Image 1 (tube, rainbow, N blue to C red):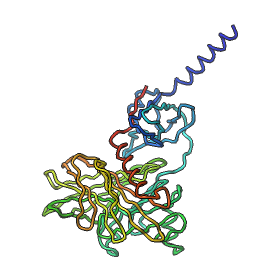
Image 2: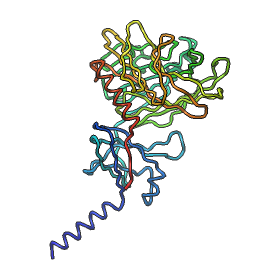
Image 3: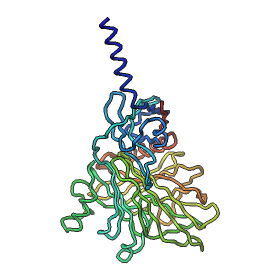
Length: 375
């Protein structure tokens, strides 16, 4: 009798534990393990499944009951649109996660970005692997126009943007030198820099200028994202407007970039590109990867690897105007998303092959995203 009562009590306990949580099945269809990869679930779906849904009280746990860091995503809207967390799933396998109503812990910031008016209107963003920046209009008078992407290589998983800027502006040191955590040893100038995009019409690149306005959409702990609006610029005799939306998740070497153009009413070619320098060389990528790769030898600053992936049909690789380019088609009214970023031989990428492998796997993951089922 005691055994029966114990089993009944245990069943009731387990049933109670499941009352306020839903099960998430994450499926990996690739023959490779996927570690700390972002999973995204719409809040509208969660609201349907969870009585008393409150986006400020959502906790994700793994199959062992351990809390998994998560983030409610707003995308600049007044109400949340999704919940993200990072899953580990073995090759050709499933993994179980749970979402319940509870107060989440304070998670370490692993993705961060902000507008930097004290440094001539930069916008800088980073995660626990890499950092980037892009230029606002205040810098034009000093350095001329540039809408390319800059890279800050780093070898620390801590956030460095605020401290590097503060030390630089205070005259303590310069982030152009490696002070043990990394540096900005990449020069952009009047180029696409490390993977910016531009219209590629009549076999010519048409470059815009520095962004005129910005909006921070989300800001950590797992994802930082923002939108930039640019002044109109000329493309083959037509004035064109441009908006770029950037997103960077924890653990990723690559930012996601979504381009939107208006002004040209017919399909046209665009190119994402990497500036070529005398101290650099092209890193050949396998056919079908949809990616380009480049290495820059920075002397004592080591080797910086740049990579850009355009996951669209009909892409082509070419070299033009001192750039390594990957081209594709832009359909008016349809945002175009691609990925660009960098790595460093002093932190994780000790050979060309290591960078090739990273980009190749990243491309596979884009084309075969994790499948999410709410059970």
